[in-house]
Figure 1 (cartoon, rainbow, N blue to C red):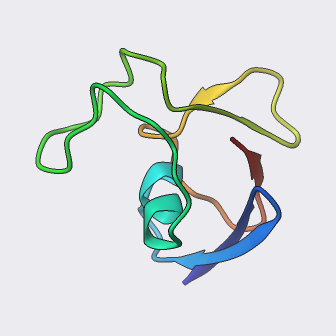
Figure 2 (cartoon, rainbow, N blue to C red):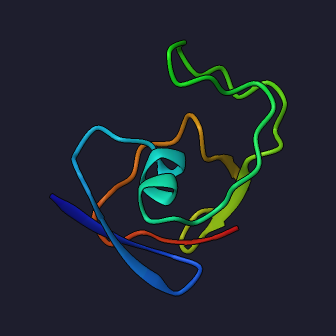
Length: 74
């Protein structure tokens, strides 16, 4: 299990999950259009873009892996 923070809430998820999957498991809503749980994520709609401490640019939550200690703002 890895731990990350999304909108100030500490979240635990399995390694290999995306930020979007971790958020959904924790009941945190991140809007999407192109994401479907049975298809590979492509991040084309950019609706799920989030900001993370230590990263220069916003990133698509549906394609970005959840990593230990990351702090994300939706």
